[in-house]
Image (cartoon, rainbow over all chains, first blue to last red; front, side, top):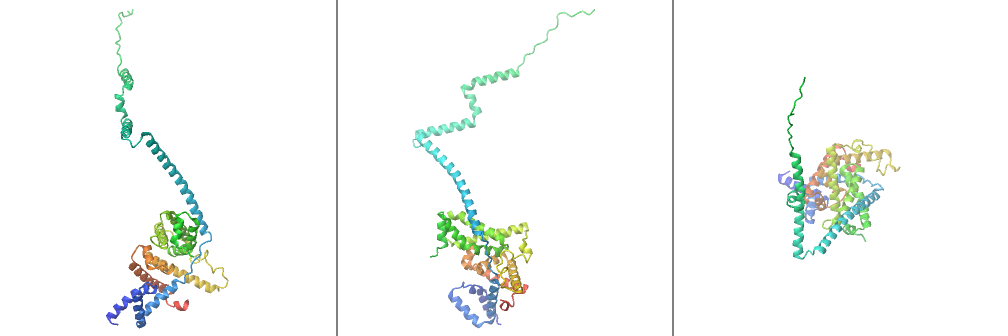
Length: 175
Length: 199
């Protein structure tokens, strides 16, 4: 067989599967059909594809068990109730956050810059006190007595009095 | 009037359970068969098909009818089947159906109870089906998926390309090679030659 003919046939043969599955445009289908009428080799190849497909279709489809649908639906319902429960928790948290927001807006009038500044200052102070409480305690005049007391206690703990033992004035004479 | 899958899915998104049930009814047999041909284990195939439908329901709220519902459904099933094959390879699990030939059709054979068939014909038919199934299993994963989708699910090359996430040209060559390999393997097991005489 000439080389050009082999190459030509190889091109056709690579398209045969798509031709069998009706996946080629009409003009290509016409060309392949025309070629198949003239080329015995390609016709054999096409017959092989048909044979293989017949064999594959020899497998019979299995039937799904009768409980398949009910199983799916019950699993979906279980999932739905779980999701609803989860959603209700999320909704509760969301509504609590919304309430808090509205309370803050109502109370400090968030749109007023003066109140807003006060609010921010308050928050900063609270955070500062929480984070740096030991340093601020020293500056706090109300805590001074406590500081003093603690100093005294420290002194008490540290200082001690040394009482020298006096020499006895008279010694007992031992006879 | 037949309602399209996409419309049913949109109804399902609104919370209509009957629409979802109709979708399950439409695709349950096809999907179980598809997964069964891929993983060769009927009971696991049913589990995976159920899982596929659950995933569809879960993502129903986010569903946008851009691609066809069928492609989307088969994509989920394909991914689950691929995971199953990989997990099985990792755990080195062997199923009874792979190891025992006779066990294969115990649960889902229609003609086991049908007395019209002669025992020898029945046995021959069963054996041939077993051989074809085993041969199909020997194909590389992507070739097997493409061949199963085109032969048993009758999907177009374009839909298969969406499912396998590759070009239409790649699907064309995959199917071409799959058929060639299948033919060779069938001849090897001795049922490829005289097919016309046997069927």
